[in-house]
Image (cartoon, rainbow, N blue to C red; front, side):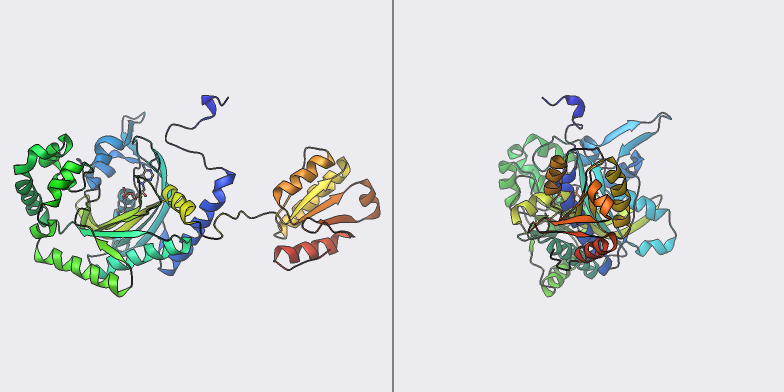
Length: 425
Ligand code: HAM
């Protein structure tokens, strides 16, 4: 029986050797695509002053009200484990010179939200986030959506659906919320308890309420863009036109809101039909974040990597699951041979050849089993007899053939094999 002492905190997971190869592959592929678009990595702390999040994500958002891991440190400062990456990156940018205001940054790492754990919803999860700073421009928004789609296709993700909407300009906010409240108030009795409260606090969230009765009321409302300025409507039209020009299929979803308050103009979400209720693999949009009186404009998105891996399980593209196997597994018979083999392993590794060996003095049979399990292309066998003769036995694990080689010839052969040259014994 597993003891609780060996379990991580609820809603958090270890990532061990069986699954880590796929994580490393998607990270590597994403980095390659990001460099094509001229983005650089930034690493900010996982722990921030709580105000970094309260002032930018919005006081009434679920993330701030219910989901943050917030505590006082020993100096009685309120600190929070980051629930998302944008706010911390903006804090970083605000501390840099003016030239950082058009930075193109990305980050990869754990985020923390104390939500009720369920399939696809963790308390520690990982995001790949992208932030492109700069003044509002429909073309800049579309470039970032194109980058997101490029990353998805590099992973072999198919079947993703991009949904787009607008939050309008900051100046639109008042007319939008007044317009929605006026339109909803006559139907307040048909709304759920949460939405009746949202009428007073954050009326936009009524639009994406999952309750079917609220959905029926929302379906009767005029589109949210009708409460916005001409500028905002034109901006959205421009985004949709440019997406079509780049052949990026995207659907307008007038009920898409996004759960964070920093958004202006374009917002989007990407859903994958292979996932259950938590089907958003990415969310993003244009934002304006005020830090110490300085307004920072940008556009970005964050991809939930756990959900991407679940979606990849569904789409099953080639090549993501393959872990890299050792070229050789070194088997020692006797203590002297084991010492010599430790030297040999170091020599091979310094030549860039991936290999493994047993250093616990296990039996030949156990070592052979390990060689098989490692899926190494070759086994190298050395005991007293080989030591005396100055040779090593090289066994091809695929066809079973074996030969005796002196050290330089053995190394040459393995160098060739690790470069992918076909070597027959
Ligand atoms: P978000 O929509 O809150 O946006 O999160 C982005 C993605 O993170 C979601 O689409 C989902 O895939 C994943 N995610 C969120 N919560 C969880 C969870 N509890 N468990 C597993 N995965 C989760 C943001 O965080 C914004 N900072 C995105 C952004 C960047 N907007 C502009 N720039």
